[in-house]
Length: 125
Image (cartoon, rainbow, N blue to C red; front, side):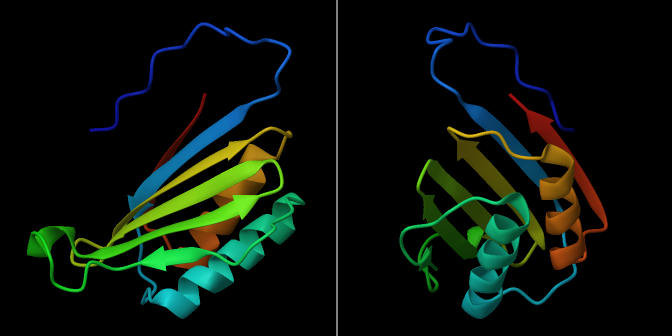
């Protein structure tokens, strides 16, 4: 069950911070190429600018089999987006952090459609 995060005190109201987590089950065959395409599509759809290529890791058999998949990050001019993929469970988690505003509904739509998600939840905080 997904529990929503509790609101946090805004310790720096003068600093723009938008955070979004999207989690759910996907149907797409995910590999490094697909992850790269997802970051391009998502950042383009949201008007977010990157300054480097994504960094994509796979534990390649290290650790528990149930946790195999990918950890990825794309740096943005104004922060970054992390993606975590559990290949065996066909589950993913995307965490977007931006110092500029972006369209949450569009981020959810792009993620859902790109990965062919069958069930997802999201929370902005």
